[in-house]
Length: 512
Ligand code: UN1
Image 1: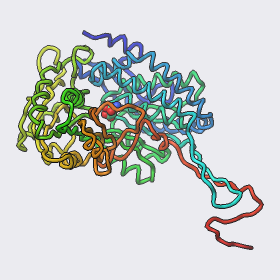
Image 2 (image 1 turned 30 degrees about the vertical axis):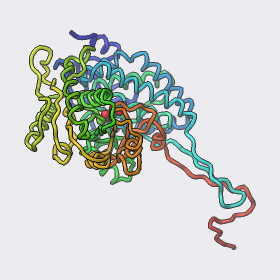
Image 3 (image 1 turned 120 degrees about the vertical axis):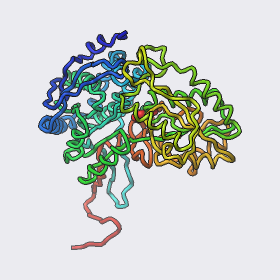
Image 4 (image 1 turned 180 degrees about the vertical axis):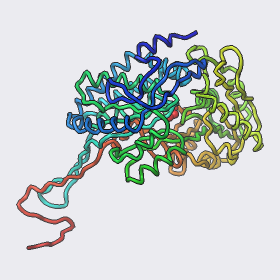
C-alpha cells in the first residue's frame, strides 16, 4: 500500500531525477547521483544530483548578490513574503508531511507536526518583521543621543539533519529572511527529496514576489559540500544541527575565519520521576519521548531517573506500556513507531544494546530487528528498555535509536539532579512531580543545566515560541523563538551629538 505517496510527490513537483542546487525556480547540479530509498518499504523514491564546487560558487555568488537587494526591502515587506510562503505551507501540509514521513520514516502525525512547526515559525517571523528592535540608552554626555539598531547580517549557511528534515530549516530561514538575510541550505543527504520539495515551494513564492534570486538557496551532498560553506568567508554565520562530532568540526572550521556559529547538537535527555509524580502522565511523556520518531529526536528521552520509592511501580507501568506500541508503516496511522533512518542506524542500535549488556545492564524490554511482511526495508526495530547506571559508557553516549535507560536514585532530589546533569550533553530535561519544592529546585540555579527544563511534561516536543538549544556538548546555540533572531543580524551602537560642542566620554579633556 502506497498511502498516496505518488500523488504527494506529484503535488510537490518531485520527479525521479532532480538537481540539487538552486537559487530560485531553476535547479542545476553536476555532482554524483544521490539515490533516496525509503526506510518505510525500502523502495527507491528518486534521485538528486549533488552540488559540485563550481555549482556551489554559482549559488554563493548569486546569494551574495541577492542579499544586497533583499536587505534594502523594509522588514515588514520581507515578512509579507514569508506570510505568502506560509500560505503555501498550509496548502501543502498534507503532501509535505507525507513525504517527510516516507523519506525519513517518522509517523505521518509527526510529519504533519513538523510542517506545523514550519507554519508556526513563519507566523512568528511575520510578527517579528515589525519588531526587530534595539534599545535606546541615556548618553553620559549632554546633547547626545545613543541607541542601537539591528541590520541584516548577510548570507547565512544552514546545515540540517535527517531527523527534522523540514522544521529545522524553517526555524532558521523564516527568521533569517525577515531579518534581511539570504540563506544557503544544505539538508541531509539522507532526505534529499524533502529538501528539494521545500526549496521548490519557497522559490516559487519568492519569484512571484519579484525577490532577487538566491535569498532561498539549496545545495545538496555530504560533508564536503558542508565544508564549502564552513570555509566560505562570505558566510558570516553557519547554523548547524546534528551530531556533536559534526558540530565540533564545524565550530573549528568557522572559528578559523572568525565566523559565527549557531550549534544545536546532541542530547542525552532525562526525566526525573520523584515520589510525588503523576504516574499516568509520566508514562505517556516518557514513552512518547523515548519511542517518538523512533528515538531519533535530539530531544528524545534517553534516561529515566526514578526514585526508589516508586521505582517498581514506574518500571512495571512503562514495561506494560511498551507492550501496546505498534511498530510498522508510519503512514498507517494505526502505528506508533516507524523505522530507523537506515541500516547503519540499525547497527548502532544493536551495538548499544550489546554494550549495555556488557557493562552490566539488565534488559527489561528486549530489542531486535523486525522481519517479515511489512518490515522488508530492514530498518524496523523494537523499542527497548534496559536498567542501567548513569556512569556506563553507553549511557553517557547519545544513541540515536529507541533505547531507554532506567535508573534508580535514593534520598533527596539533589541526588537525581547530579545524575541528570552528570553527562556531557545539555539539551532537554524534565521532572515529574507535584511537589513544589522539588520542581523549583529543578528549575533553580542548582538545578538542571540544560537549555530546556520542563515540569510535568516530557523532554521532547518543544513549541517554537521558546528558544531551542542547549549547553555543553549540545553546542550552546539557540534557534527558533524568543530572541533567537538576534544572531541573524548585526548590532550597531549609534551615538549622535546634536550640540555645537564636542564633549568626550569619560570626561576626558582634550583642547586644541
Ligand atoms: C531535533 O530533534 O533536532 O522539541 C528538533 C522537539 C521538536 C524539535 C526537535 N520540536 O522535539
